[in-house]
Length: 257
Image (tube, rainbow, N blue to C red; front, top):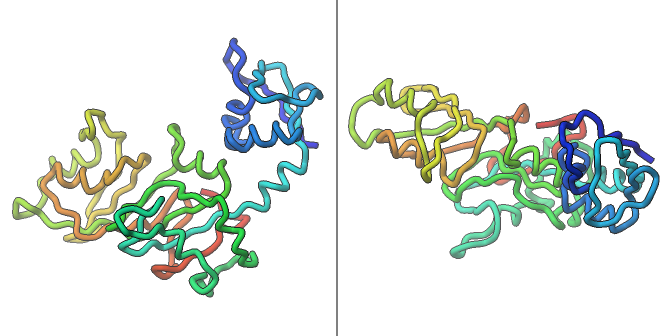
């Protein structure tokens, strides 16, 4: 059994057990509810029930069978080609997950994980990458990783190489480059600060901590730039590296975003 004391919260009102387990990084809320239904979670030694709420002095106990379930879940890194959508099929375009099959596994995958078709069961993208973009797409069975990457309070950087053309002619004005870093708004809401600089004469490097729909393309439009090509090369400390386009590999046990 694994024990987790619910200490150091400032809350005074009880909160739902599954929500707190998610906040602590123990499980996604859906996963926590599933464990509770299976009788794998106790509070102060008493079997938990769905909808139960907890206070700071309560102690959560998780059966080792639950963590063994987590250990069996995989996360896959795919170098997505143009023409595939991140999530569900739409407008005749296939979802990127169709590329996750044995013959597309990178031959230099550093992990020793044995390919199993079950690894695509319940797998979902942790973040979007639009149909016209390439680069790292994370597909995971682990709700904790999805929350870490796309949760509302995610602090994980995503880095992109973006080839652009000016629609106004000439070089981008320094004030517009400053706006790309901070000062733009989309959908009526100010964007979080970004890091944007010139990689070379026609390519920008973006580092973001949010992921609104087609965000980089729309940011560039606001300062008179057209995006010619966009590639995601890093999420957190995990880099795309030499992973070929259309190929995938497993996230290794010693890797963390």
